[in-house]
Length: 146
Image (cartoon, rainbow, N blue to C red; front, side, top):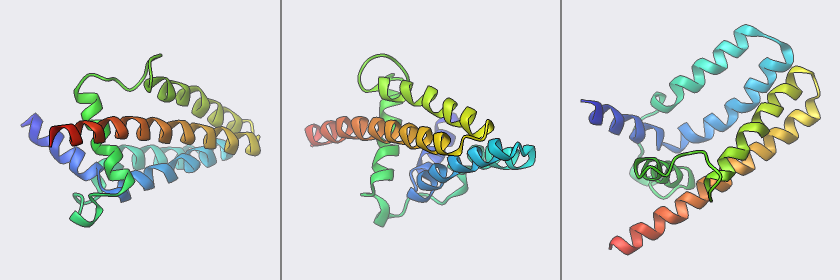
């Protein structure tokens, strides 16, 4: 049963609408911190939690999208115990993402909007670089398997 639920989770999360809408939820968290609005913060957190299962399974037309490829790679990477954080390559990119995003939240809370947006951009660049790095490894494995 757990495997079926996990499969359903990943298949829905692989929908590019899921991944790209999660990217847009970051600025919503920053806005909630800047406004010090607990209801907006709660709405953003609920959206983040529900997002991976809120969308339909990936359509065949979306199978080659960058975000879908990235989610498939993330699932493969985590399943092989690659982990998401660490000091080795490429996990160091994701590890650096954490303090960058934490600073973005702090900067938003202290109403330093420019710094918050810059830190968020750095955070997303690190996250996207991690996704691309594991996706390349995933693609290489797929090519070698055929």
